[in-house]
Image (cartoon, rainbow, N blue to C red):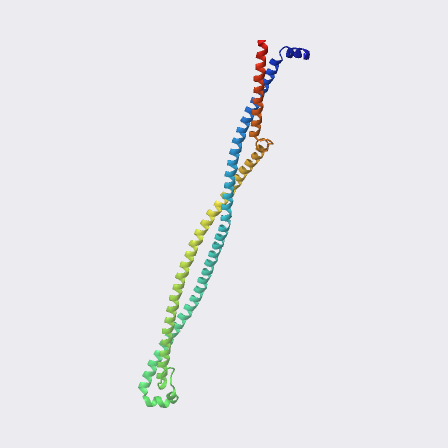
Length: 289
């Protein structure tokens, strides 16, 4: 067979070389088309991959920033809720203590007023009895029977005798009753004011705590959602990075650039075309002889 091929080439050497040139030309053109197609595929894949990686990276950064912002915010709200609850408990205790003191004070004042009334009534009755007694006996008899009363001065004003002393005692009971009633009225009013202000403050703090809990629940929900989204987006970014690594060997890490390879191949094609043209001319000249 080799001798046959050699004989054929010897008979028509230009035709065989021309066939070889044509074959090489077709091969180079096919390689150029395949490489161009591969480059287009790489360019498209790299572009889409880069856009995806940039997008997912931006989303990851945004979600991380959102979570980092929510964490201290939630902690601050939790601290505020705890403080509001403590203040309400403190006010509730203050109300209970004030109520206990007020009840004791009221009971004491009520007892004092009752004793003062009873004392005043007793002195009044004694006063009437004594006045009637001394009126019937006369002033001289009073001085002879109870001379020691002549020097008695009373608690607030100077009067002689037992009658004067009783009038002073009655006045003291009356003053004690009035002062105690005034003190009770003032204490009751002060207690009512304290209760109204404390209850209003408790309600205000309770409402603030309730709203803060709603806000914290919303913030925790947003944080939970952001964490789930972050996990999902991070997984997508990881896949995009993995795909980029797959593209690198054939699309990025090349020893000769596509532009350089294309230029070299064009030179080879032009050289083969020129050889084909020369051979074709020689073939035609040989045929003419």
